[in-house]
Amino acid sequence: MKRDPDFISRGHDAADPSPWLAMYLDLSTPLDEEVKQAWLADSSSRSRQFILPFMRPFARTLIVLFQIVKVFTPRKLAFSRALHRLLAWGMENFIRPEANWLILRHFHLGSQVLQFIAANAPVDVPTHPLRPNAIADVREEMFLVHDLNLFNFVIRLNQGLRDAGLRLQPVADPDLSMIVQPPLALADMPRRRRNVLDLQSSIELFTPIYQLLLTDSDFWRATHSLQLDETIGLYAATILDAHAHLILLNNRHPLVPMSTLRAGFRLTLHGLSTEMLHAFLMDMRRQREAAALATAAIDTTDAVSVTP
View 1: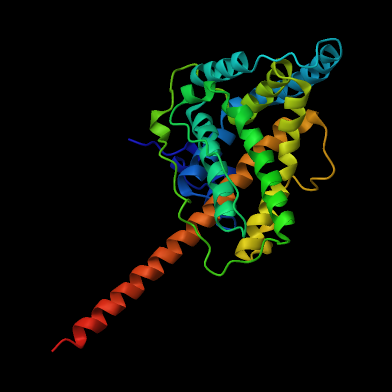
View 2: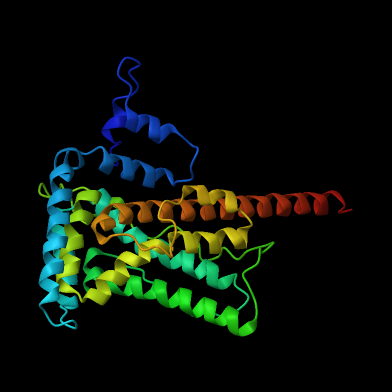
């Protein structure tokens, strides 16, 4: 049985209102109901309150130190397989169930968003979706492939548009067939006593480990990929003719790369913006399907009414 987060079960106290309850009840931004509960339960956890303030400066110090180490090591030295096995082990044993669920969802959602853009682009663009069903799937270099997929997609899409002399245009009836809820259940995530680390603390800790065990090129590409939120958002907004929703983006200005020291915080924003875009597309698909059902019902009623 699913247990409501503490900020919901405690209810509203006018003398001591919960900021988490206020954010949960607010409907100004699109976000799936279960995702919002999981996100705010993770954000309001004791781990984020007491571990993150210490984890963030510690992790950023490691990034600086590891960058110095990288100056004196071979440029192509990397341990990608070991990295992903370590990340999967950490997720399995130490990360909160809400955080693990959101991380696995992100691979599905990112793949669906790229498929949406590809399906509605005026040129053919191959995609390579990532659909992990369990934490163990992360071991197959999934974080690295996720970054490669994003850059390869942007390059292939724009090379195709340039070669054809075309641009992305609004689509009156966009294909939303690939936009679905991932087959992942929060209840299936590990819930041991030691699974306490929140999403932001986990990301801050993972970032220097990612830097240490991959090449400089892989690490910089991973951090630069966060600059593409605005780019992907523009692609989707152009197809949907809905540029007003770009206000939800925070990792702006893709031509001005930011310091790797803030990669952990920006990665959290990246995950949230992806969830919001997916929720917006899901809502659009539901509205379209509801309208189609209503139209079919009317047609059926009319057909019956004219039957002798």
